[in-house]
Length: 115
Length: 109
Image (cartoon, rainbow over all chains, first blue to last red; front, side):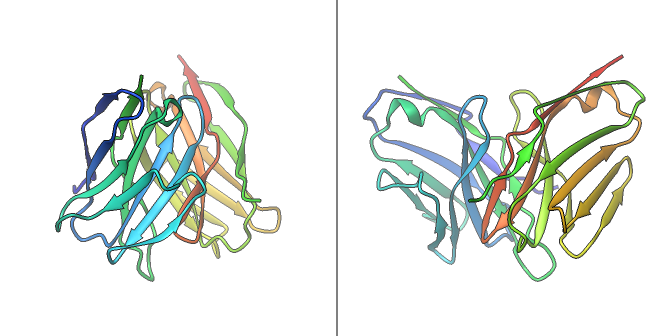
């Protein structure tokens, strides 16, 4: 069964450094998403992406964040200058989003630790 | 604003039924979802219900939707120790999923 994959599984970085989190969505999916989950808290929507453009973004997704689909398979989240409060689990998701279904399938997540 | 509410904990004995409840806010949500998260793992889609349905059954899982009260429930029949996990309710608003804080289900043998 096709799955969303994410790399790395764990990323440790120093405050102020740039990080890039990578995702490979399910191959026939057209919509891509990033969410984050701070330890012990709820999963929060960051951004949705379709047709090489951001569809929606939340208040969390400020100028420090950017997303890109650099090729036909990868979808990345870049945090330009990490802060301590960016430490969280980051989940990528993808969906077909047609008239019959809108189901988002999630990857296993990347745990980001900012020191 | 947008908020999805769930009770935080539920403890049941193996073999009993579990009922996890959720309230949501946006009456225009097209789909409502239940995801399961095991310790250290990602979000596994369990089931979803279209907003024009009242009930959906999928093996041991039964989802009930009360649109008038904006109330969603997940019933797990014959709960097993392997069902111990955090269960998240989510509603779709636009392209985003808005999640509750999750209900931790603890199953004792």
